Amino acid sequence: MYETLASIDNIRLNFSEGGLLYMNITLACIMFGVAMEIKIDNFRKIFTYPKSAVLGIISQFLILPALTFALVVALNPPPSIAMGMILIAACPGGNVSNFISALAKANIALSVGLTAFATLSATFFTPFNFAFWGGMYVRYYQKAGYLNIPIHIDFLEMAKTVFILLGIPLIAGMWFAYKFPNFAEKNMKRIKITSLVLYLSFIAGALVSNLEHFTAVIFPIGLLVLLLNVQTLSTGYIVGTVARVPIADRRSLSIETGIQNSGLALILIFNIFHANGGMAFMAAWWGIWQMVSGLLVAFILARIKIPELSWSKVRTG
Image (cartoon, rainbow, N blue to C red):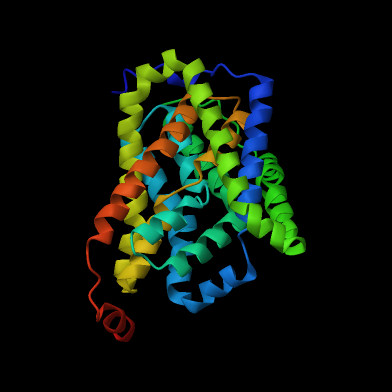
């Protein structure tokens, strides 16, 4: 497998300045639409389930990046793939997690609250976790003498980029929904669907223009994405099980920890890491696969009945 990926660190995708601008605008529109749905009540929902909410935050922002670093060390993939895996784990949950939580009969209120918190706090946690764990990866392998990794990690530069591309559209979307609630309510869904279609069209175009690279690495990349996805989905559920929270909460923790914002990962890769092939292929395939796996997990969980006494037993036990 690694023989196929041997040259992936040196791949730079075919990508124009116009394509980068298009991608940035589409992500900004997506985040603007997401922000229009964020209300103060979303954060109150976190306090409704304080134990599960704290576990969700710890699971996503502390445990998941650490476990991903351990997975990277164990698998020892090419450096750009490893950094792509670490970046994915550092990104906040995607808003599609709320939809999957509903299908899985999870605690939707908890899911919405955690998504709102993760989205707003990503301007700090994403660059912090990537700089910390990515920096540790670079130091680990340079110290071991295995690799010379030409990836520079600048926390402040990354934080600035995340704030411009994520923070500003979020602030603008929340302000717009507050000032013009009727217009926002009527057009929120239309804005989100349009921006998502434009974003997916960008992904399709980027893959087609780099098809010769993508077809060569799709299977080894797919295996690494699968292993990472198993870890992300199981992390939240195991944390909730160990802490003995209700089963519906465990499902929400699993989905919120397991579904990451691949759009933000791709934006950072193209803006900061100059369209590095390994990182970009990892994030792009992650975005496709996590939808498949998320829907599959939701389909399975929805058919497993939650025992009627599980809530009271867990809370009193």
